[in-house]
Structure formats: structure tokens, C-alpha cells
Image (cartoon, rainbow, N blue to C red; front, top):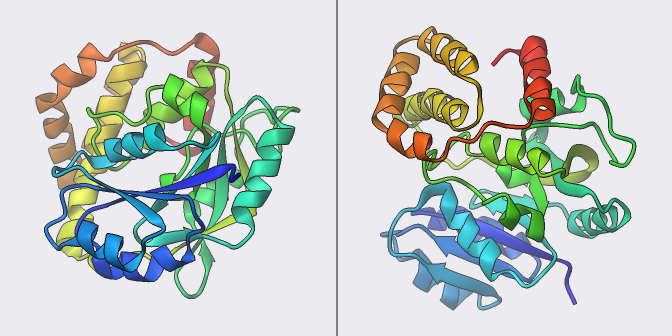
Length: 283
């Protein structure tokens, strides 16, 4: 019986899925965020080994929660429609989870594009300033990239999965903090490898929207989990990131009610680790 289910969230990215889905080993659950390009039907026809969940609407990152809830394995690996796991990577991840029972999340080494360059976030995780826990197989972290992460299913569900307040982009921040708050270990393991070939369906407008979302979601995440002085510092930092940052802060105000309803401060030790990271790398 497989130990890992791969959960893929997608929306209107059939050309990317046509390339990435053949590289996924069963079981695979694809959750479709209301695609209008016929993705669910095409996947069912071309890739019968993939379980398709058609939501009919766009839930953003929360779509992954639906996939995890349907998974029947103790571990779940996430993939985007333009990413996949290297052969043997998930078997190695499963062994590491079995050997390290406190581990809740493993962040893999993510190689980008045909040139297979290391994603900058992975380089930052590799030199994490946090104290390395002796019961984890790699540097301790408090962030990750969803398309290069494997989670313990039970820990993910206990932490509440991804959050509708954030919706998409930067959705990993709150989940990482909550996993740590529950006592779970998060670490970076460079021997487990995933590949990401960013979709060609990106333009300057798309990049600007991501910058706005990045600032908006940084503020919303701070509102949900950080002391008010840290919220204020995040607002100032994001507001100084130019027009996109200021727009992101304004958008966060519009969604602040949803974040406030989910507000719950982190344990002091997790808050202390977050501050240590910010002193090392910035907010």
C-alpha cells in the first residue's frame, strides 16, 4: 500500500498538466478550482489513474485541503500543475517520516526549469538560523514552498490546512507556524527533490498581482497570529515595497474581518523563532 498521496490543485492549466501528470505516481488526487478549459473532463479521459475532484468554483489554496481530506495515506505530497517529484523522492520522504515521528512537514529541494537551478527559498531554508532539532533529518524551518512539501496527513488536518483568509500566495506561512505551535517538526531535506517548471501562462500583470498578494497575505497572516506590534511592523515593511505593496496593505484591510475572526497568538517559543528568522532575513 502506498504511503504518500500526491495532491495537485489546478485552474485552467491543462497544457501544464498534460506535461506534469504523467510524472506522478499513483495515488494522485487532482482538485480543480473551477477551470473553464475542460480540465476535469480531459484529465479523467487522458489520465484515468488520477482521482479528479471538480469543485466548480475557485477556493484558492484551500482546494488542497479537499485533496488531503480525501487521501487515504498517512502522508501527502503537494504539487502544482507545473511541478512534479523526482523518481524515488517520495519513497525517501516516507522513510524519513517513519524514522522521525515528530516530523510534521518535510520541505524538499526544488529545482527550477530546464537548467534545474535551486529555488532561492530552498537556499534560504538550507542556511536556516533556527536551532537544528536533534530529532529531525535537516535544518529546522518555519516556512516552505507548497509545491515542494510533504506533510503528515494527521498533522496537516489538526493544524487546519490552508486558510481561506489568505486564499492564495504566501499561504504556507500561517500553516507552518501552526504546525510548529502544535509541536510538529518542520525541516528542509535536500536529498528529497522536486522539479518546478513555471507555467508559460505568466506575464507582467500576473507578476504584479503576485506582488500585491504577497503584501496582502503577509499582513493577513500577521493579523491572524502575531502580536499587534509585529502586525504594525509588517504593515510598515510591506507599505515600503512600492505601489504593489501599498495596494496589498489596502487589500488586507478589506479582508481584515476574516483574519480577525481567526486571530490566535502563537506560543512564545514559536513567536521567538519567527523573530529570529526576521532578524536574519527580514520580514
